[in-house]
Image (cartoon, rainbow, N blue to C red; front, side, top):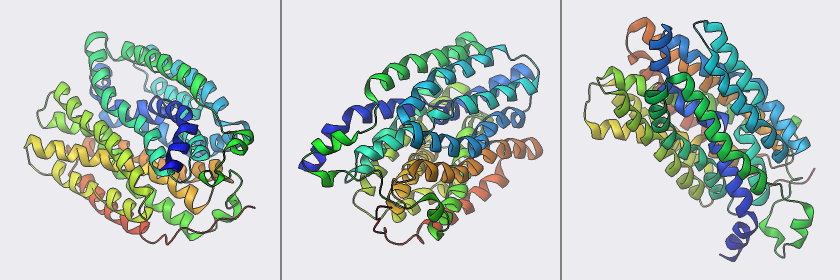
Length: 410
């Protein structure tokens, strides 16, 4: 208990700063609020749902390039610097949506711009620092950090729905940009910082902390089976979860549910993301991580079944949203934890960024695939069946990782 108190006493400020930064980041705000924008943008511009969904797919897929670059920059220049530069740039890019007219290419261009200049708000920035401050209770610390995304997922859809109803979708983007910048920049500036060697030396119980210089080199880690098993599991899980989240509101509207009520259902995803982050983080400190991963990443099987069936019960619809949120709450917690435990912190930024490529591939293609499937067939039945299979396969892959290795300093 003393170790836990000491860890949290030393790292509480960076932890709070990381949580707020993660909650106001690109992969949080733009991802979890996009489904609310889809119907409004489509109705206003005449673009199909598939066309509109391609925007968020562009954002996620560009992380294939930006995440490894940001990971390298975080390792070299420090996470705090990268975060402080990226936050206002993210707000600027979001404001640019106000100037979109009816040219689809300009809409996509803004997504490209935002994906590049706001990449420093991706989870690799926030988790890098938290991993440095926490060791024995790293799982729950990462859960608290990424619970910020769950808070955004809970409040974001309802807040954006209100903004759109009152101001329209273009001005809603402007006001959303101002909101997240005002919240995140001061928090990161005053709270978020890397742990220095001096602070390590001042700590009387050094076993509490793990060294940032312990682990596998990037070139060695990417040759291992575990790297690729985690990667392919992430593709499958992220595709299903991303597709369900970004299309949840349109799917519910198709059932005759109003946009406001659909947004409230979608808000359950955010609430359960918070719970998922914290529960998974707690469990990771006490149980074998791949087992926890298998349980949570296979769970969207049930959501796909409920959403693909004619079930109209509000209880079951709510349950499907909660399961999606729990799975979403697990995936990036698991990625950060698995990288630190199986590969160490020596090249954490590079390895997290490299594995984020797999996450981006799955999460990036899913929204537009869901949208285009609807455009072609008028429903989501086929893609929901595929999600069910991918969820199970993802969980099974995680079970093949084996025990944690003993990591040595390079």
